Length: 338
Image (cartoon, rainbow, N blue to C red):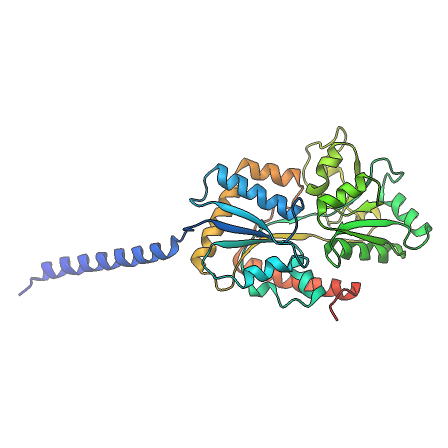
């Protein structure tokens, strides 16, 4: 007959073995990582803000060997980004495909009737929020917002031309808001990507843009463009001089200059529907590692992003609110699919 002491020893050994087995099982479940190349979808063209961020992420992940597999950026911009979203929506949840989002996550299905909603995907994380800046050519007579709005109000309807990315997307939403604020019609000129929009302004083919900071940065540095204001409630926080006289922080808010318009855009990561918690956790951890790199802080500053990170329920709550807000904006602009 087993002694009480031996029974105790056996029980302790059994419990330790069981605990170790459970830990190993849980650890194995939680330790998912890619087993082949990861496709990184950009639902926009090359050279725009989303494309630049995706390729930056690809570069630093590769440089610091943060993944054992390669990450491959693929642009799928057809149908105002609908091509990319539908591709990810229909993909197997094997963890080897991710997509970076911009506001077309909301605007494209609302404007086109595309059978897609952000809830069709698995949210991973918000990487940042992107600003919008009102730009004019550096040689224009508009030194501040009031100069431009006064000129728009005093001109013939549709005389002023606004360049923007795509139709019935964020740039045109902001344009409609400016029209309402000035009481004057503006001609909207759609371009394929944000980089092309900035080039059109440099060439004086249009009068103004609402480019994201990163899309117009090189032209501002080069002395071709002038920022008038940022469409945010607070000035951008970055004090480093971009030109000899101005930093991002020196750009006032549009509201403080009498143009009461605000808009921010999501830069987030999503995966196919039914992706597992372990797969999501892998990418959350990956992008948290990226955010600790000095290159990330430099990228955030150069592009004047709001350096905000969200995941889980906090991100879901933000997406729900953003969806409602975009429905309101698209309805007021008359951009909803009939």
